[in-house]
Image (tube, rainbow, N blue to C red; front, side, top):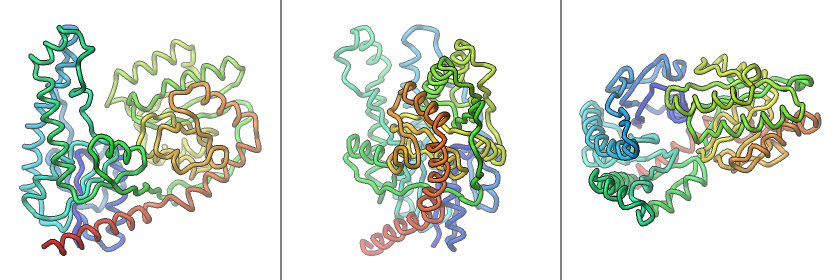
Length: 417
């Protein structure tokens, strides 16, 4: 069996990239031949150790700066310009994917991962007549573009029509629909996206939970720091990360007399404006001496942060899955997790984690205070978190489940031939 794996970019160390690369490595270990296709590739910025030994074809070896999205100063134009980029991208992506298909070897099945790349599905099916499986981390939607405009002022509605915003949104939605309809199956990580897919596109999907290399994220037996609680957050800067909830929570616990330090790991390259907002909050609250931002770090340093922290906070909303949660748990670090992320679906409050409502700094603050003051609770989550990961989270299990889906699709394809 030869499986093709396609992804938009291998030029950043994100959850989507790890998911696909871990799948590739584990499929190879299971005896499956794997070929990877990527539009962008930057080996220095994307899990170098996971790229090793894999057969990868890319269109661009390093992500180029796109100067086409410069902002207008005229008020109201930024939004329209952003929507107009959809139309530009429709043409640009088609060119990219045709080039990719020209370079593509014949595979038994193509599994494409998450954003943008799913638009290759109809082209692949038309050319190769082979099954296509979409691993969808986040449900795509342009509903903000095509939504009713009755409450929008007349001048803005007119501007939208002049800029063809509704037309653009419809075209993009049609592309999404044709891609979805062409897939043989869609795989999601959680019920959040399963529901979205049903609501937006009336399409069912299969849940396959992500994994973890338990050997890399070794348990660090320890007691929590009693004088200064060491808090950790990990994630690329995006608004849905909700890091502002953590900063607000730390401002609350500081006012209650709790001493802490916080470290954050994650690049700000993808959304510098959001990163600036968070740093400005830190300065405004006078927390600059207590909170440090480290940007992108290599895997060994990331694991060191997990193993030396007392509490890991994952405030994301909405968020597919949340691999970082299980990395922290594997290292023995108690976690505070937003119910707005998929990881919360498999966790139990006050048994293996502390679960909080989305967008709730007060609940995060209460969780920090609980873990800092209640030694029994901290010890319980310290042990139970690791036990949960050992029993339930494995990349080998993830790869086997995906392989079963691939085999089913291939079997069905043979029957229809």
